[in-house]
Image (cartoon, rainbow, N blue to C red):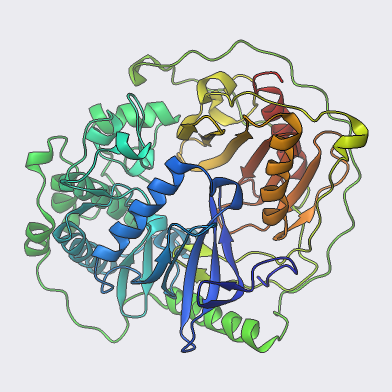
Length: 528
């Protein structure tokens, strides 16, 4: 999508052309280098930039990405983790993710998955040779490109002999890092991962490519983790020619899994081919190139449509208070029963007043271009703004936020003297696909007005990529954020020194639900 008028024109030496996608902690920009080459620049959202724990994590991502060859990853071109807004620039890689291909065109046949397996094994050979463990190999982190496979997103990769996670604030006792349906048993139990952990994930990715689902699709996140550790995988739909290899990859004992090099031997040679992938992949690639050409030529996209009128505000009842959720120590104790998915009015998410561009870089698709707008209270005239001392833990908000499964997974938690962050995800069943993410960010320590003004500054910078959300009836400011393929709608709300970010994937419309969740998320924060 095109930049908003207040968006950055340059990041380092790179000229910004548009926004490729945006998630809970950052955005990916399409840029051009001084030599005209296209690059994808990953940029941390402004209000995370002064979180030293998060900045340390970003530094490690830069270091990890630089260690790996570009043959099987998106090669790093430049980075500045110490910039006011940290960024990482990598070569722009055109190609849909494996997850997007399966979702759009269906499962892949055995021969194609055989080629995919060889490419992923080769990528892991290079990643492990660099002394890294990926730790989050999943369909959305696998790109199908013109010349083969690219494995992306080394954001939680770990050096096999390097610093512990505790030193970078990534993991604490009982935390789980990765994507539940594609992680290894040792990750699910919060044990130290090894290169064999990536091989287990590779096996789950192959099953998904062949069947459309993970072999460990529980009715909830914790049930999925339990199944990963204790249950045999469901391989009934895996073709016989690949079943033995997949079974070895999915061995519960890491020592029983083949190494990536051994996996290549088991797979045998892959026949050369002018076209690596099914025709649908090349159609998606062609559409990406056309959209890039339109973006740089200033031509409107074919699917540009006028924005519908602003939805009329609807009365929204206050959420009923509920008891704080207890921390679940063992996944086996979680009930397999879950309440039905709440109904959602069939309304469409806000659409662009500008053109839509369907680009892919580093596993994210571009979204609708949006105008700018965020409103703010005059605190000097209106009195002191809300001052929140802390953010909630995920178990505490489970019963307060009406989302599928009634349980959340803690993705990230950081607390310093100046600020605190928490990010929680909810998953659908039986597919165990993430359907919602809620993030809380609190600035603190300088006084109510100063903290709120600091929060407003970062919020306004991020809102430059969105469009004003009106008629909420709560918050000091709000905007709808541009979305990628993962999210149908994203709403950010600021109240005093607190920002709540809600991302929902709900085909058929989600505005009303996003507002409901944002209101409940604000109410779940420890009182001002």
